[in-house]
Length: 286
Image: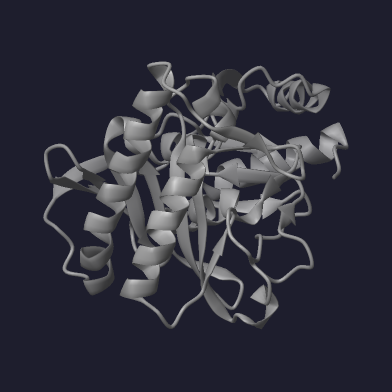
């Protein structure tokens, strides 16, 4: 849960906040324009995924802003040329519109994902939720903050004593038809847990995890590094995490590809152990 607090006295957060607020406003205005039926450009990328004028507009704004704030660090963005990325020991990682399909289907569960990577590890994370006018952010070794753009209120995550779990809230993508998910859920139910399914879009599920609305987020189909890095950092900061189906935390900008295999995202070590046990029983692999 989050409790009200004072503004953090941190130079990076102070520099980033107005930039994030403006990026949020740009994306929200693009969404309003799209849902109002205005002329709107949507194209297919080489991998057949959609990209919109909103992705590109927010990407251009944030690439320019980050270059001004910290020109020493490159930005690995979904919508930019990332040639030479393996020479970067430290970099920003950016998804200017995570949940493009949610955006196109007029669901407001899309985000801006930004993280700072150092030697493969997420050190600082940001997830902006434009339609809620708020941002989750913080360092991996500190409890995260939430900031509301509309009223200027800061909130700080407060760790609660973990109760004995009998009911599990599982986050899934909208209309997921992959039979692996039902197989996985049934293995959890066989361990005498009541399962509640929570459907939501993309990285928005990480925000729901911070708010206590999702306990476990399994993913058995591909994502990219910019989809998970910020969420992993925020979950790690509250004592949870995000691991491969083999039980290892993701590392970033280390592999030949930016594509991720399947993962388990969890809020507590207890839920991690429960999920790995269910995964073993279900015999689900990448």
